[in-house]
Image: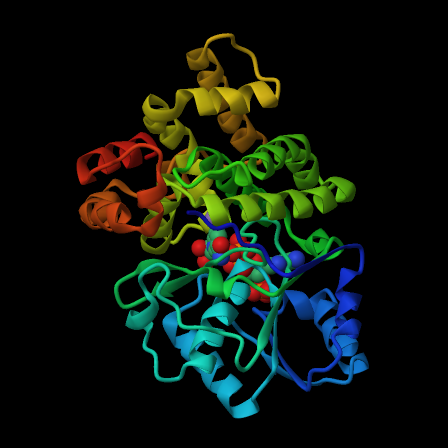
Length: 382
Ligand code: NDP
Ligand code: MN
């Protein structure tokens, strides 16, 4: 028995935000967003205007920080309890969308604690009080279509990927004009996050006939468009917005692997953006996993026209192509080059690797791993 879940509705294209005007039959919407990027781009105003046109009263909850904290989640849940929305609209990067998903859980279930929902697939039923609309502004996390929400506990510096199909948004709106305002580095980091999602999903243990074509199409589109998008080609950037969503549909169901386990644990401790961690880790992870699923990596390499005839040659070509992509995106290939000192590494490597082994993404990795091997993979990327 297996399950494949996607949002109920997906709207996409230029000015897809306007679809909010058709949200009839609801009364109150809370809009959850990050710092100021959505305001500066005019997208927040468009969201409010469209909701007002649909006859909804709105309230704004802003200021969700990158890599959102448990405290922010509970603050937002409290605001929701006071306002009583029947629609939650999250607009912004993965951080505000993820935070809003967790707020939604505690809005519907004020009796729950963070510990109650930490383990995968332990969420209570939602949608008694509100439906959830997600409007992504970055092209990476695909939180608009996934069953995940990544929340950081800053008292321990651990990132928790909360996971349950219950938190898959009801409506995803992919407005291709929104990612146009992303600065170059954000485009690079979030794009490599999307590539890592697609590659990890293609080899993950929960992969299926439903997730495979989505993952492969995402990989090939990202190889076609990410560098052009980074270099300012706005049509390529629009296509990247769709490609990252295909990757999200794949990994939300096929799950991920140890690039994400390590990205979750190193990101918080080393203070490096999530997508950048994935970009650094992906080549070493492919090398480690290739003993278990070389033919799958070879299929990817063949699908995007990389050179090689044996599975080994094709897998090596894929590793090289990822490194080449990082170079063209201006991403330094190691933690060291990203400013992590030997001292910081040594002080944290045991904890990082012990926690990475326990991360839910490890259980869907194609090759089993223990703490010692996790350290080796991390050191290869150092
Ligand atoms: P964030 O949401 O953290 O945003 C990073 C920065 O980008 C913020 O400063 C934000 O500014 C800015 N920004 C966002 N959109 C734009 C835009 N269109 N133009 C200009 N600036 C913009 O970035 P990500 O999307 O990469 O999300 C990362 C988070 O998502 C991490 O916590 C990661 O762990 C998590 N994640 C979640 C997954 C899931 O399935 N749910 C999967 C993978 C990662 P401002 O705050 O001002 O809006
Ligand atoms: Mn990710």
